[in-house]
Image (cartoon, rainbow, N blue to C red):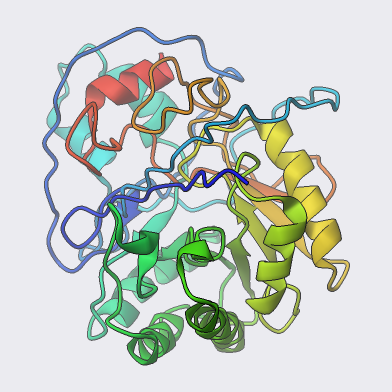
Length: 374
């Protein structure tokens, strides 16, 4: 088994995608250094709102979800190539993010038009990576109310599980599971009553091998509780659990852990998510997610969502995970994939937010964004 952990780097209170962290913006510094990249896969569709903008005024860049690409080659897709769905006008573009800040602040930059049309104008997730129980409900509410006002669907990422990233680059989160449970209660209080997608704790299941059996069971019980709390607070919320990615754990092993974490229960879960901040091809992820869902069991309505933000060229052959060269944007965010059991293609990781090699971890780096988008 290859331990291909997806590293999520949290800078300060949060880094990466749009993140809802406190009231501070965090660092928006960039380190321009443009390099060429292949053409997009597929060609970009007409831009539509994208949560790549931060959460609320108090929300900013989400955790810089750097995920290690698997050292072993991912299985190549065998299914027929499908046409790319257009950007979904139903996904919510939150009006604040580091990429939107950069676009506004750099009107004369020659890279601006490409970055704006192919990244900034597309829906992306809003991350909540800091442990701030006093403000999390209001920050979640700022995003969900904005989506509801437009009739659009926000994508939210709670990322505060204790011991996250096994104490690695993205260590942090709540001090213990009791505190985490209380934080989730407050997170849920901000969900409102409109449609919303929740990507529940990236890496929390796939990377749980670092925990003792007892600690793993406790985490899984807390995740199952979180799913129930979120869905009870808003019956229209769709909650997805961590399936890692196609180059990581065996589908049967991953499904066994997911079952323990409540992902097979309709009271907690709408299915699984995969490839967050990683690079594995959409075809590989579709096949992998279906295998996980088959092994998971549960109600027939369970589906999967895939992070396609940086997977247009597939995973790098050498397993590089930190801003690898030659990557490109993947399929546009959409709730209409045309694939059975695949509920959405989402941009969970904001393209252009560095893993820490082309820029400071979690910061928007225009040279990297341009390389992905050109």
